[in-house]
Length: 106
Image 1 (cartoon, rainbow, N blue to C red):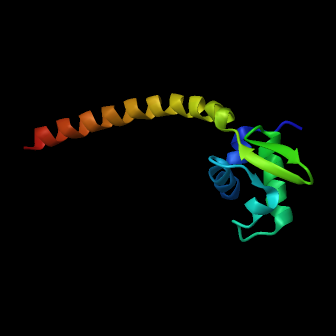
Image 2 (image 1 turned 90 degrees about the horizontal axis):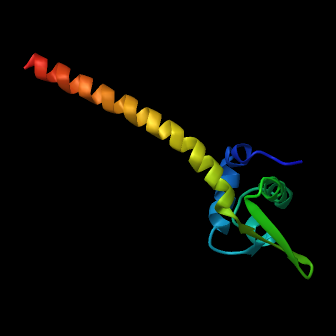
């Protein structure tokens, strides 16, 4: 099942896992040590992140090492960029209106 990247980053624990794995590869137990939740819960979060392409898992011996693959976050950046432009225009127009009202009151 291919999961949606937006679904994955909606959870704060999953965002924290991505942050943790952004600069280093860790075994699943190493990831779990950084959270106050059970190892199975961390494994479930990692599975979701892997299914949507935000975390890559590679086996080395009996251990499974995880690393973040933030390229999939480009999809999120592109989606939010549309709204950033939209809201920037709206807020600039509001600012201009408020400045004009302030000038008229003086």
